[in-house]
Image 1 (cartoon, rainbow, N blue to C red):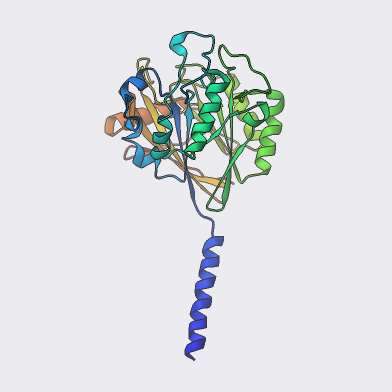
Image 2 (image 1 turned 90 degrees about the vertical axis):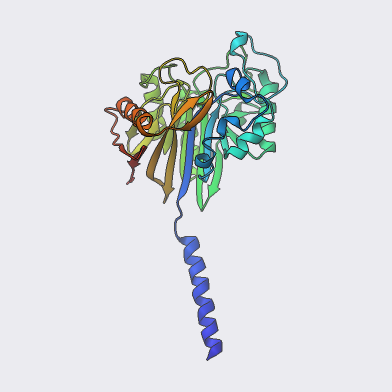
Length: 342
């Protein structure tokens, strides 16, 4: 009798484990804007590489996957691109350790500054990020590798990432057999998105696009975004304008046209010191909920905005999103989008 009882208990435990593994789990994806680690940010950091993330680590580290756009190569070497020296950026390799410890899992390299120190600069960046187990998209050792999707599996959900820049690298001549970033080609975009989507449950596409300091998305941004959604993309994250742009719900998919700055200097033009951290709760291969955390930047360091500051940032974001089928509730300084896909 005792033996049968023990077998029954064991059977119940086994069934519980199996059911637990089969039950869909929630994956939390966290996304931020542009991360610059040179110029004024370098001056603020000095040798304290943890400085930029200190006030938001608890937010970034609470996600299963944390994503951002790296706006400079991580390198000590490389040939400077032929452009104005004040617009040549690079970061010390020690920054990669702080990026990982801050909670970042994946960075987009497809932008107009990754090639500031040529092929050697981006190769060193990829090598350094890989050393500290930080994944990247939008860059590679040649044309094909730069455009390859990255897949991350968390809690049974396979999430794919693609990264593109509409801007060619400034002062650098690209060759298909040399290291470079992934540029947008309309004639191949649809096929690339469709192919990536076939191999994952949920597909995120990042674009470096838009007009600097402009709060409203342009026609080209909207056309590219809609093409991606029509081709199977589930979420679009935009960067480059240095300010927040609106959110659109198109065919029941979300488009964040610009997440603004995140770690950045020169908060002079209006809105460049206002940004967000977005947390997407993904379950059953779909977004179920979106939480938008308002962020202010002071002395190149982002921190969570409170009270009047928080309300102001979120209400401005609602204004930029007007007419784009988005309903955001603001409660206790957090923006909330209940997002049940069908």
